[in-house]
Length: 606
Image (cartoon, rainbow, N blue to C red; front, side, top):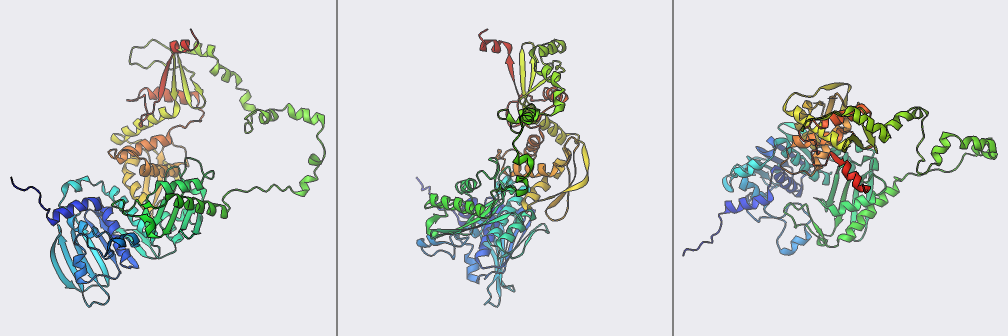
């Protein structure tokens, strides 16, 4: 029997390795940018076409490579960072594994132009499917320009797996920002299809954060700085008012390398405890510097997940550093309880209250409101007292029974019965619909989410919803990655009533919004939509437009605690039961429940 085990050809082995290192265009961008940083560049330019599918090009003014090094760089396991195994535990550079360029050359067509300062000429190399097609001397500036074209041209299945250009470009922008944030002393620029997206001059870390995340943070950053024998922590955290309802701008760097760590994020959240709502997330950009021997950065192919030798110490330092910064900059509000001496001498303060005045005060509605248990902030308005009969009729069981009997009619199965003229709202959250054999309890927010979702779904596939023009366009300034994401949604947003137009770099003008949307909330809804799309955690197979209408339905639905008029309750109830799927929200939450009279009888032993 013939032997069956054989060595793979180099190009096949490189393609397999590439599957681990180069998962999408953004993966190649990360590797090339990190190599440029390691080369000592002070200027790095990234240019992409068709979201990196057609071209990714990185130009730097770093030290460049010799002819031999340029050729060797594309061999597997070729690296200038490691010569013995112990070097792995002292790495402070970015790229070091010796697989990135070989992987890139295995799945794209690569050209490299490079020159060292001491050389009279540079080197040009062209590689296709891991095979060197051309190598020759050329005239070049000091530094390196590497271009990779037609990503996954030789692996069609992988190319088909890529997302839309907008989605892939957003990933590229994310990787670009992570590298640029870590090295504010380096100039970075990003161009996409000839359009300048980011132009980041050399700056301080604070200026770089504002350059990337927007001017809204300019006066809302708190410096974090702690130095210990074990580690140093530096960076900035956003003031509590910058916290968002979903995970916003949060960056952790260890030895200048971007990492993901739910554990350290929890430490920051603990530091912000009691300063922001429990369902909000603070902004932070924090750098941890420590001895490389105290961590393992090679636990994941992208090096974005690391393992600390002592996680608890790092956690405690991070929490303490952020908490100390917040306290140092007087984030917690203080109250001045000193009383003006002039007030002390007033007759109303200095003289005791008379019995007549005390009785008069005690008989007032205001006194009763403030002395009623758990009602310190409730002040009963005089106008509400005139509506006592309406309140009584809406909650009196006998009156409700008469209303139901007078309004319900016999219906065939599948038909919607007539809804009583008076529905009942309870706990400012539920709509109670009495019936002769029991009642329906409708959750107002869940029901409205279902109604809006099907309304938006129909608009995407049919006639667009009406839009009302804003008297003055609302400007929406965004981070570059968010701008790319929202730009993709403009046609679909127009169908559901939003009119957005580009207005300068990374900015949109909201010129119109749905006709039934209250004025002044357009910007907030767009920001929440973006956060939902970035951090929704929905399954990958759900399209961006599907995520969009789910998010808009949740945002625009009437909220728990909103008092509804009878007309509003009737509209929700009527419309809900004309929906294709009336019994649940798009995310599967129930919209109503049926309670039978027989079930109630059992509760009372009848």
